[in-house]
Length: 119
Image 1 (cartoon, rainbow, N blue to C red):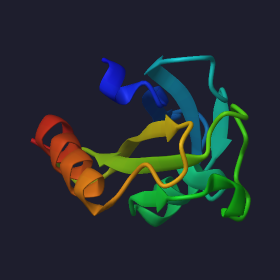
Image 2: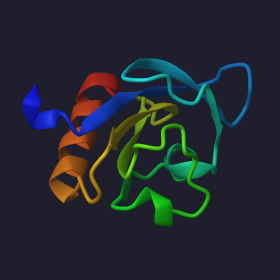
Image 3: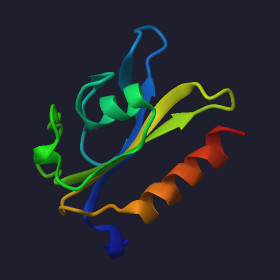
Image 4: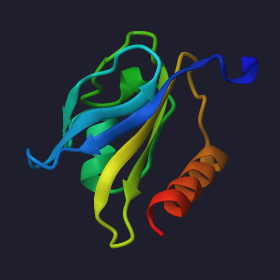
């Protein structure tokens, strides 16, 4: 567990079935995150609206970043789709270190989410 000490928040924001274009916090580990995030806002909202993984080396330079926790310096957010390709959630991993995530992380997390949710 020491290898990942700098990943202090990992969890899902689920698509709210009652409020169009909004994410609501789902299962997570770490401190309390933002409760709701509109599509297109912040890193999670960008991943949801674009249906593209967001790998952000420096969240403070990301336009419209939502500071749910001031310790976050880098972040990866992966869209999670079902077997029909419909967005159901985003997986969000936050790090206290800058530039924590790379292409290897993107590929691994996208593959994992696809194998779990899109089958």
